[in-house]
Image (cartoon, rainbow, N blue to C red; front, side):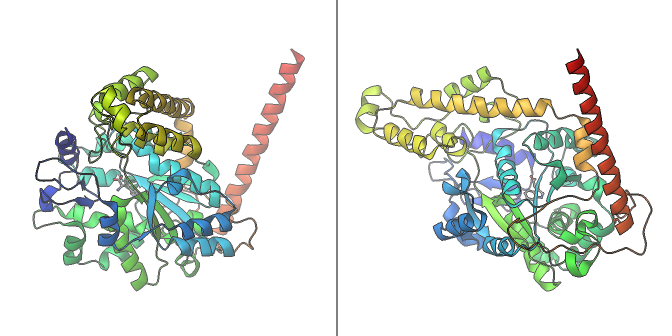
Amino acid sequence: MATTINAVALDESPIPEHISKAKQTVDPYNVTGEVGDDGVMKAIDYTKLVEEFGTKLISTELLERFEKVTGKKPHRFLRRGIVFSHRDFELILDRYERGEPFFLYTGRGPSSDSVHVGHTIPFEFTKWLQDTFDVPLVIMLTDDEKFLFSEKRTIEEVQGYCSSNAKDIIAIGFDPAKTFIFSDFEFMGGAFYRNVVRLSKCITLNQARAIFGFNDSTNIGRIHFGSIQGATSWASSFPHIFGTDEKTTTQIPALIPCAIDQDPYFRMTRDVSARIHHAKPSLIHAKFLDALQGPGTKMSASVDESAIFMKDTPNQIKNKINRYAFSGGKVTVEEHREKGGDSTADVSFQYLRFFLEDDGELERIRVSYESGEMLTGELKAICIKELQSYVAAFQERRAKVDDAAVGLFMERRPLQWVGNAHAPRVVPVVEKSGDGADTAEGGDGKLTKNQLKKLEKLKQIEVKKALKAKEKEEQTVTAE
Ligand code: TRP
């Protein structure tokens, strides 16, 4: 089973050129565990990844520091080691403490309309970081990547997914005043493209091969793509948010929450950043949510029984968990009662680690299951309930996201944020750009001081109008 699921996942991103059958491979295009002598794929060895990639495990001390600086209890993903590794996260905490600017950056490859629970993990976490730090967030939709890395997909197809994917992302609950979503095809140009080229100029073919495993038959679009995903880490790519003074904007770092497979892009970007005197991005890495088939398998958007999808009905969720969720229980009830279940292998328990907020309850379930007191069926029932409510809450928000909302999030506009309200805020200066186009959509995305003022004024008028309309409406309601 494990191999089938992964074969499909590979077929979606056909770069298995450097993949070896036996070894664990984790890069942006392949995520496969080690295949043992018995031909069964093992779970991803995350400790090994941290060593190989040269990242750091998130320590208890770092979490304590986080709590002290932000006054907030770490998210359950942090408490449970689901978000487990980082690069320079402590530098972001330093900046937050001092009131210095930074921003959040994450993204998604729009490869299909079907979003599963696994896709929502990094976004849930990013939203929480946005709420915690109150900083701007840019979300990149890599439609170009999904075209370049697929044999079949057309440009029209991937562009078509952008709007529905944006709606799914918005439904996570991001604040429109602080969030800019963009498609690469649409946003490319101006300051962004200048940074893409600055980055690509610093990467040789040899380096790209070493980092990503490309070979002589790889199309050159794929080889170049890393500079696009990388350049988004630089605040100077977003003059409508951070202004046009590169003396300031090059000093504003990104914090990138992502799944660990995206690290190679940013390892490369951090090297180049240091060379061209741009602030290096910091990273905070998440593990993957296993497919229903168990450890070592990966959810696939094209395999319905591999995942719980955000469109699934309560009944579908129930049936999928009951039928497919790999169980850590014993074969007979007698044996289970005697020896207990294996919570680390049990998919329902693993999903509860991701979705059940209450630490005490999670621990009670673990103890009860491992002692044999709780049976697999009971554990599954708890998991079903949690997932049903997670998915239903998402669906409720998703139903309210319309095209106008997508338009708002994807519009080039200034964002508003406060950062650390308890620290003196260091504001990046927005300088007047000499070559100013007159409209907000000016080709290179730069906004002059006057344009910013104008936009702000227009926004305030909008708000006032809306308030008045609301007052009127309320009056008529009371009159009736
Ligand atoms: N390459 C990612 C994907 O295929 C999308 C992405 C772009 C991304 N920039 C990112 C993901 C930054 C995490 C962080 O899904």
